Length: 417
Image 1 (cartoon, rainbow, N blue to C red):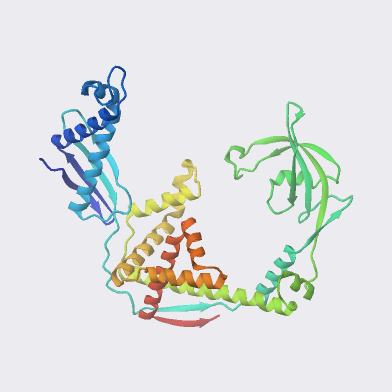
Image 2: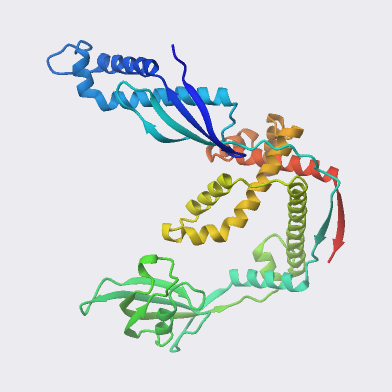
C-alpha cells in the first residue's frame, strides 16, 4: 500500500507548513469503510436494513460519506505528520488548499503552531534591584476615607437642586412622536459617570418632583456603539435627592468594620495591608526583571505567529469590534510580544531544569489552603476541579518554583524608598 506523504514547505521557530498527499488506494479504503458504515445503518424504502445497493447508499449519503472520508484521512495524516516531523503542537492544525476529486489523491496543507525549542545559555549571574516603597500616611488616610464612604448613610435633601456627589432617584422615558413610552426608574450618583453627561445636566436643573422634556445626545465614546452620537428625546422626572453623610472616623466605626478594639487598631491593620501589597508589588517587579534579564541574555525572540495568536485572544476577551482590530493590535503588539518572550523563557526553564509542579506539590498546596479555610482538602480539590482552575493552580506553583530557582542564581539588592 502506498504511504501518505508529508512534505515540509515552510517553517519558522513557532510554526510549520506541510503539504500532505493521501494516495488513491488509501482514499478508496476510507471510502469503502464509510460506505459500509452507512449501508449497515441505512433505512431506505424498499430495502431491508443493511441490504441497500452501494449505488443507492452513495446517492443518499454521498455528502456524509465524503465528510467521513475527509475526517479519517486528515486524522491519519496528522498522526503521520506528528511522527515524521517530531512535532510538538500547541494547537490543532489548520487545513488549507484542500483538493478532493474522485479518482485522485487527496491533497491539502497542514499549518501548525509549535512550541519553539530554546536552549538557554545563561539563566543566572544577574543583579537586580528590589525597591519596596514605604507606605505614606496619606495612603492610609485615603483607605480610611474609602471605608468611611462604604459605611456612609444617604440622607434625603428637600427643595434643592441636586449637585455632583449626591444620589438621585429619577425616572426616564423615551418620547416618540410626542408620546412618552414606559418610564424606567434609576438611582444615580451624580458626577461618577453612571449615566451620560447631558442627562446629568438636565437632572441638576430640576427640583424634587419636577419633570422636564429634553433632547439628550449620547457621547461619541459611549460603550454601546449603536448609541454613539445619537440623540434621544426624553422625559425626565426627579423624585428624590440624597446627600452622603460620612460616619465619624472613630472607635465606633472601627468596631463596625470588623474585629478591632478601636480606630488605632483599624489604622494599623490598614497600614499592614498596604505594606503587604507593597511587598507583593516589589517581589513581582523582581520577578519581571529576572525574566527580562533571561530573555535579553539569551536573545529570545517572539515569533509572529505566537504574538498574533495572543493578540487574537486579547481581542476576543475584550470583545473588540472587527473594524477596531488594526488599532487594537497596534496598541497591544508590544505587550503581546513581551508576554510571548516571558512565556517562552518560563517554559524553557521548566523543561530544562525539571521545575514543573508535581502531584505532590499540588496536594501540599491544596492541603495548606484547606487548613487555612478549615475545610477538608477534598472539598478544595472538588471546587477547583469544578471551576476548571486546577490547571491555573498548577501553573502558579510551577512559576513559583521557576522564580525560586532564578533567585538562587542571581543577586537581589534591596533599595529602600
